[in-house]
Image (cartoon, rainbow, N blue to C red):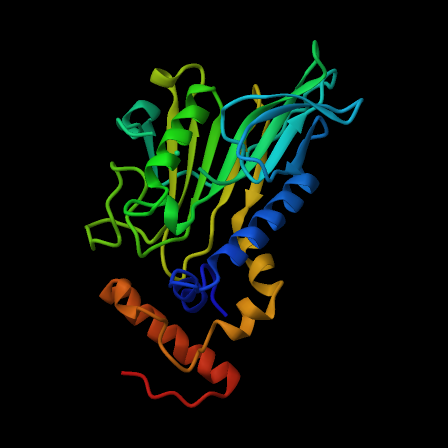
Length: 292
């Protein structure tokens, strides 16, 4: 129905008991499935329930150790003794690039997908990338915000690449340097995907922000793995797969005859864009609308 984030569904999901946990679980699952298909040969992904990052022995099928660092919902591992292939970058350029050190404040983060790499000497997997789908509780004013910030710093200090997916336009951004769409600040965007890479060290690392708006397609992004490896993710394909996977998302939570729930959380310009698109949807579905 929409070329990017579905405002009807997305607004409903952000309300109390709106179904966000179900969407989060399904979206993480689909992200892990796509990763498993696209990763270079010497990597693999795995769903994780634990909130700790651990190492794993693929030959004995047993965990080797666990650390105190957070592990996300999906992990990507890299096998040893594999020659790295050369790939051409395909993702789009970021909207904004900042020094990583400027995106770190004095509080410190939780929730996600992990990419692991196998260490040849121990046959154990080490995490190289963490992918977080931000939940309302992770955002500023959320109940887990400070815990999330702490775990965010754990990941960055461990040298992991960090990908943060933010579809939550009703709350401010997790990076204080970014303008807040929720507070109607200039140049703010409702959605973003943030890719932080602390290599070669935090003071020289970078944070790329891929910001996008209402009716804009989700970005195609090159996710850095280990060394010069990367995997290109089409976040629009993954999002649409989740939306189409359940009638809860396709039909039950959405009513295209009505404006999205909490419609005023969108800027006036975006409200107008949504109304115009609703008229197109109504024409496609044969719905009679009485829009302002």
